[in-house]
Image (tube, rainbow, N blue to C red; front, side, top):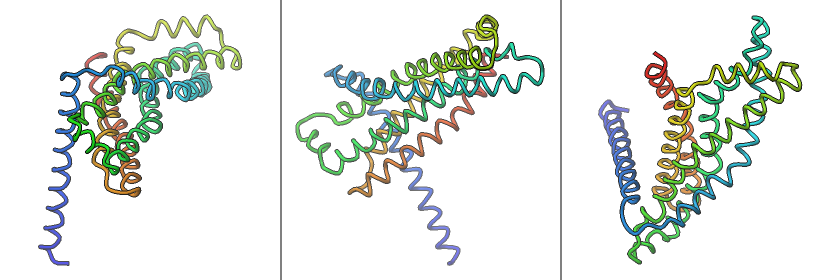
Length: 263
């Protein structure tokens, strides 16, 4: 293969990526703009809050309680080597609030609700339901994308809070009931270690992850290809892209928030 052919393929790939990136930002702008234009349809937002938030709460609670339990076991095992098992409560709470709570919640919601949103919008796309909305003078961005995007922003912090609270409860039960740690020590060390900045860090992360969840899920569904293969590919790309974006953004957020809040 000649140098010119390789150069052409490389240039075409760069142009395609740049064009797709630009379209995604235009899509995001139009989605956000829909939240500030009339008419307002609150019932659409409440419907999506139920689909994303309420329907995800059970799996979030289940994952949260076992995550807290595992953290308690691992923290007690590690800290016992240094004679510091009294700090098990603070280790569990800080791990959940600052890191595991927002990240695991985002990954679970992306897998459960994000894939469903992408598939739903993708099917509406290939069956021309979105074109039918335009023919009835209904903006599909405002009617379909904006409620899902806003619901993700609202539901993600709430689900993260549920995850953290139940996770701490699971860690408490395991630490005090199975590992024989003092309940008073567990709670007092946790209260002493957790501050407002830790809570702010978790909230900021959950909001950003909700932003990524809504953006990627809606965009991949809206731009899916034709047929069942197109919807299948878009759904897979949505879950993978959003999950990777959450993990990458989490690293940068952790670095920035650590410098801003703790230095």
